[in-house]
Length: 239
Image (spheres, rainbow, N blue to C red):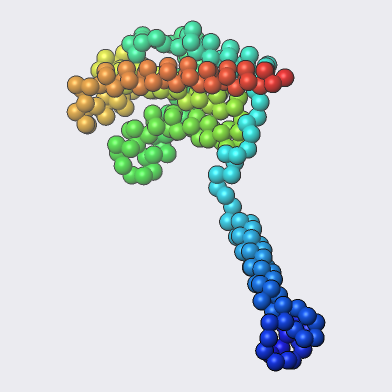
């Protein structure tokens, strides 16, 4: 046999007559070294694989940006304006100046939604698209701030998002009463929710649906401010 250490050729035995190494122990040592080498190769391959396949949700491990006190005060002021001036019922005759300003901003996205969803060639989707787009735009803004781990921006987007719930719910409720003026002075045939409730025969639940959306909006606004407050408070305590 040939010694695995010094390569000296000799008769079979348990030890090398030239270097004195014990064959069994030396072979066990070689096996351990091979195992370590294999593990290192596997780890290297896994690191290379991780480098070529990005972790889509790695941003969730990133820390949130702190909410500065001036930002918290400003956003809380916006929440207070909504709490004071936004409608407290789905039955209204007109808007307060603040609500009217917010409504007119949302109206731009509402009308754009009819055009955007109308591209799909479905009449129902085109009618619904106005209200959908009112919710979709602020939700996209929220996702953007959430991805950037920006609490203040995310809270503002949630205020905008849930504020649109209230706006949409009032339009839904008006499908029965037709009190709100439509853009361009159009008649009842252009009322989105009147047409949708007619199309799906939902007049037995129209007010329940509008009230559900209305109160979801207010609950969302309240919870968004609580989240903002807790975030600011935690940051303030750490200072």
